[in-house]
Image 1 (tube, rainbow, N blue to C red):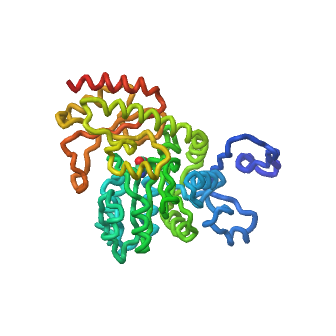
Image 2: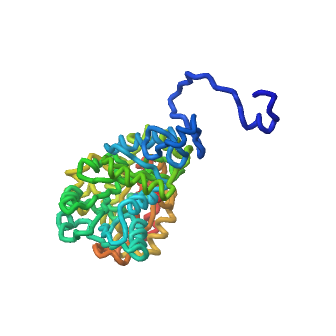
Image 3: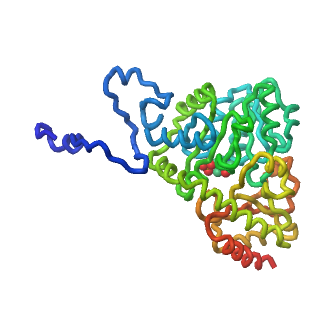
Length: 390
Ligand SMILES: *Cc1c(COP(=O)(O)O)cnc(C)c1O
């Protein structure tokens, strides 16, 4: 840079221009808060909402736009917006589509923080929030009101794994002009075609298989519809839900191998689940592929595969203290929340006391996530830990 400027300035303004023509597989990581414009006119006429120009780092960079396009592609959607976590993606949907006086229906078994948000909207924001039996199917028609704006769904339900009849719920909701939003995290957008089965909006916790290594948090809201995308984008902008470029890059890096990881994790989980089902300590395996799982017929009809996440109910003779000791005796399974990474995990869940559809309270529930370890080693680990049950 010209010696006309002092060193302080030259340190900050390089005139080196890297030669064009660099090629490599990874999408470059563009980090930016400030985005530069070529002219005042370009700055003044900026359009932040589309994905064909840049305005500010918060609204997107080539890295985040590329990830959004990839996530929309996986889901069979058209548009995606990224959020700093799966829960943030859920928040965007509620704030985009609900206002004081509106009604929203949420299944009893939904990912619990979604209920927390619903309770808050009911308490402080004048939204009518009602919880429905996830197995209601067409029966949900009887619950829809004039002001029902949104119907939340999740398949299978977090932790207890019921598979709802999504097409039936969508038909009933659409008859009353309510929107259906589906948390499709369990399937990673791979094993369940949410839009094909009628959902209007899809939420993904990108933290899970998309991130793939338990080292980042991200979420996405995906749709096919231009007007819904505009509403989602407005909420995304107003709530300031940007994501960091490095996290976006890491997800892009993981996405290429997601399908292989998902399939391996799902197959290993089936092996482990089948072994658990034969154990006298276990009273029930809650996995959609098992005939005694509520909604198993919908799973067979609508899904093309299964993820590595399922739960078990212990026989009722075991106390919480006993199953806690079982958990602490596991050597390969980590004890912690979230899932979708390379490592297997186990978590105990206490079912909310206000869940009206849950009747198995006398049984301890543990949720397993099966990662990429050898399933035989995982089974051996479960077997040795079960010895502490006596
Ligand atoms: C983990 C999870 C979320 C939330 O994702 P975070 O990134 O942890 O906020 C939402 N829905 C489901 C079904 C999940 O498993």
